[in-house]
Image (cartoon, rainbow, N blue to C red; front, side):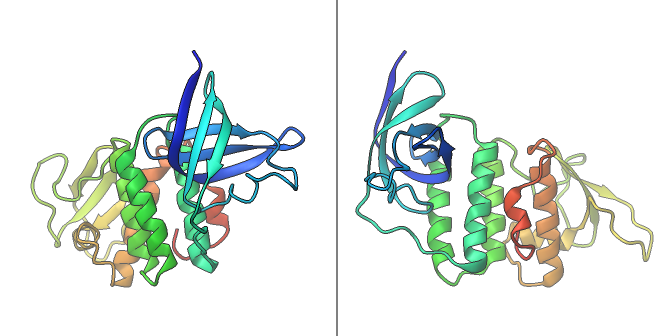
Length: 239
C-alpha cells in the first residue's frame, strides 16, 4: 500500500550518494521516527533540496511510496542549520550514528525526538559534553526499552550504595560483588559512588566521568551487534 507522510518535522541523520544524481537519506522525524527516503536529483547543482539536506537543520519533509524506502516529495525550512564545530560537531555525528544504528524504521519516538533537539541546542552552547552525551545515551536506551536501573541491585532489590562495588549485566542491571582489598575493578565492575553520580548527573569527578563512559559503552555495545561506531574514530575525548 502506498503511504504518505506530509510536512513532518525532521532532521537529516545521514545521507549518501544514490545512483547518479540522488541521495539516500535517513531522516529522524517527530511522529514516524527513522524514515529512509530517496531524494531524487538532489545531487544536481541546481537542485533546490540539495542545500537543505544538511545535518542539524530543522526541516519539514514530505515523503511517499511503498515499502521501507520512500521518495522525498518536498522539503522546506525557514531556519538555518545549527553550527557545530570541533568536538561538538563530532558529538553531534556520534548521536546521529547511534540513532541510525539503533532505531527501527518508522517507529514513533516523539519523546526521543525532543531529547535529540534539546541535545543539538545544548551542543551549540557551552554545556559540558560528558553529562550531555551520557544523558542522551541513557534516554535512548530507555526509549528502546533497555533503561539502566541505577537505583537498585537487580538480584536483591536493595538500594545501590556508595560503599559497594557492583557488576553490570547488560539488560539486567547491577549485582553487588565482593572485592578484595586493593583489587582493581574489572571491565564490568563499578563503584557505587560512581553509579550514584551518574544517576544524579553529577559528573564533575574525573573517575565518575570515566566510569559513566565505560558503563554506557557496555550498555550500548550489546545492541550494536559488535560493529564499532565510525564516529568514535574521529575523537576519543567524550564518546
